Image 1 (cartoon, rainbow, N blue to C red):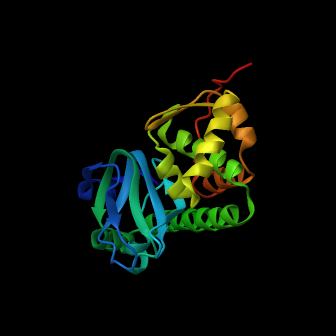
Image 2 (cartoon, helix red, strand yellow; image 1 turned 135 degrees about the vertical axis):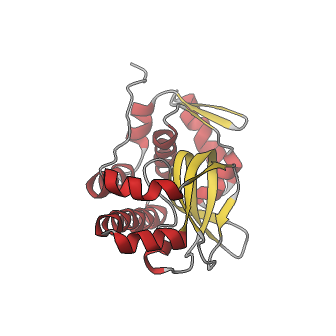
Image 3 (cartoon, rainbow, N blue to C red; image 1 turned 135 degrees about the horizontal axis):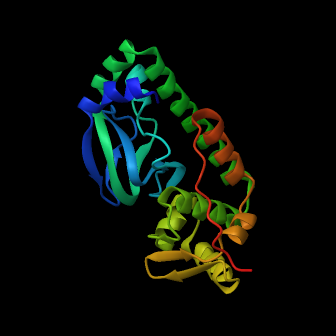
Length: 230
């Protein structure tokens, strides 16, 4: 986003804490606010009739959530929930829509972020359909690590199972294997990534593909560190 568009937005932005588990909007609701996360993670999830919620995409400081409402005022296609607590800036969607009408460059920036969202949700759908649970879990842990920029991830196995759309027992078995291999360390409510290099090797191709979409469309890439076993 250009500095001019940043100046256009700044007077209308309000700081907001993102509390774990809070629902920012629900499916088919009108999106009243657009969120610019500065810390933490917001997940887009699809809720099913059996109570399961399957994640369709996750965003943090690399993007924004709800931008489509400022472009065409559409209703939400899915739920947005806070997966990892953090903070952000928020703006009224109608106000942002008015600003978009004043700036072609701002509109173009929001469109690029929407394209990233489409690309991410489509890739995750393909991932869920074709790849093994262990590959998907490794991909998911790496994405979470990249967005939080931390090796300590505030995640429960139950939450992981929900986001991946699998049974908790499956996550428990895979997490145990990853821990025995020295890739992660699990303790109640937290997963510590011990070996991100080999964890990334265990992830499916979707991890690299998703990062490629972000870099190609909005210029974001994860801040990879080299903390790993020899």
